[in-house]
Image (cartoon, rainbow over all chains, first blue to last red; front, side):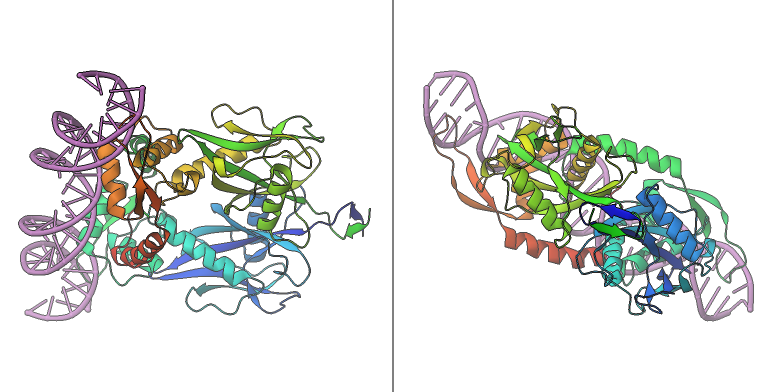
Length: 238
Length: 238
DNA sequence: TCAAAAGTGTTATCATTACACCCATGG
DNA sequence: CCATGGGTGTAATGATAACACTTTTGA
């Protein structure tokens, strides 16, 4: 037992909630099957202990890569879970991260500490280890809140996508019946953050315009909007 | 050194960014002057080490009370700061919390580990210990973002307040010149989350209607709005 | 020629903005 | 009676919601 401290310390871990979209129509998260106790054999969020010389974010990315083979993504800190009894091994505090990815771009491979890796539809999740269900719930709520005021979700779609795919994505994330096609399109178009990038081919119906996300324009919009917001004051969107 | 672990562990602390409003017109935060090294004598956010049997939130509330005498407030988790070099004593990860309080309701007293306690206007902050300036910045941005879509901020005002005070509060938090009085009032009134609670007295001008925040109505609104949001779909407020 | 999905026109309603004006009080 | 802040009327503009319709493709 080489590491000693004057006062007791909680262990520190990171966990990742990785959302992926399947065919624009099913929202999934990435889970691993634990290879060790506690909860050996159970499904859990990818994650693990933070090393002494890495940032929390690198720890999350490292564990994610080590356990699932998934890399090159933008993660965002979600929340820190620190209930004293959340881990049977003792006091373990976990910093949770989340990310959105395009499913096809991220093949998964089970690796260290994981017996298996798989994408699960969010409404057919298995029983999860630790308090990972709670972490997932917080992440889903955050995603749903975020999607309403940021063009989040472009990360979930392939590079080129149709407006119908985009709309389906929103319906999926929000868990909504059906948005009005006309109004959805008007709104999106008016924002001007899409650019046309060719036509769909080989479909048994009128081919759709393909779009990609115009990141420069989006960031410009964000900047403009910032001053606009300052001028306009509060919105109280509730 | 009685506490030993197989692997090294970061120390875990909590820090609190407590916002208060002075005369509806100056936004302040609560700082302590450190009584020990490192940064002895410097101003810093109240905070300290997490005990093994308390939640993160209780740790934050406990430290806040121990160092400043402030208690009975609703804190919300802000972000977790974990850069390997953020503390000269070694690896220390800190979970930051923030809260809004009414200045008058919360007298401050310097206590354990603190040589002094004081409210500082946010645009006249002293040099802060550790990365506490960064933590403050994140908190301020969060507050500004939050204020736009939630009737946050009622906590900052006294029980009974005038619409002008409310408007001044928004102007202060957002750091804005002046919101349009007519439109501000229309918007707030239409929300229906205020209830009239008497009249101002003893002022050298037309006395203002006093209001208090109708919490039940607000929560009802939140619930209704939830279904509305589901129906309406995304807003993309940017 | 038909099914399937893409895509457009239009209108009523509601919210937002930008003004200018009147009102009640204490000193 | 006037300075001070409290409080309202209103019209132009823009956003949103709700519907129904036309277009283009492969099979």
